[in-house]
Image 1 (spheres, rainbow, N blue to C red):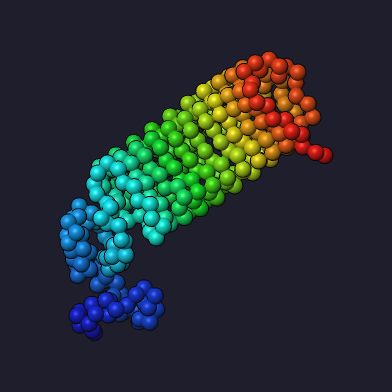
Image 2: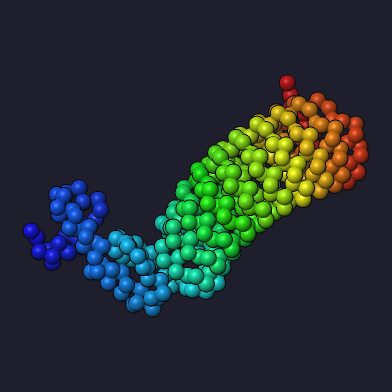
Length: 320
């Protein structure tokens, strides 16, 4: 049996990539040391030296790995427990877990990261979170704890799945998932009844869930550049909608219920497979901009002359 001091020395020397060299017994001993008070004290002392004890994590962690992680983060001087934190550096690997201790935060901006730590769910006073233009692949379900959040921007990432827990964010007014790899929208989105802005541009979505019709406060909605084949009739419930962008999909039909959108000012539905424009669209009396170009439409109803507020109409026909 190796003495504890020797095990600590081995632990200091080894990296995770070397662990395959160890036998099972020694491996267990090393892991125990990594979780021990020895490495926790090194972790704690790091923050004490920079007078940021409030960042110290509590819980069950592998303290060696946490210590190595915090020593690789170069921007601790930028982090404090104020109401706003803005860090934009390309060399950051991830948002530090200690961010979860900044309970005064109301606005958070981070760029250059690949992961969101679950500890972000502790920021119960957060109202604005911008994590756009990163390399994030997974959203932790703990994000659903941020019940005061008004604006969430996760655009331009590599996200494939939206956790259903985001349905808890009932105070959201703006949600942007544009330019990701999302294939499906969870039905829990129907809980986000305070949304005014919802963007899913540039994903892999095939179906707009009918629950979208519950978001009766929506004013701006964008599903352009997806694989959508049908607009659900429930879209007719969105009476406050003034902007709808749904270009570059595979839509074949405009639902009759669209004529309920009497506040709609901009409708962009170009580059689809639409063959007919319903006459009832002439009820969109506030429409100012309509783009139905690059579809299979051969003519538009003469009743379009009733759209007296229309300022711009694009009707470039798709060639046979």
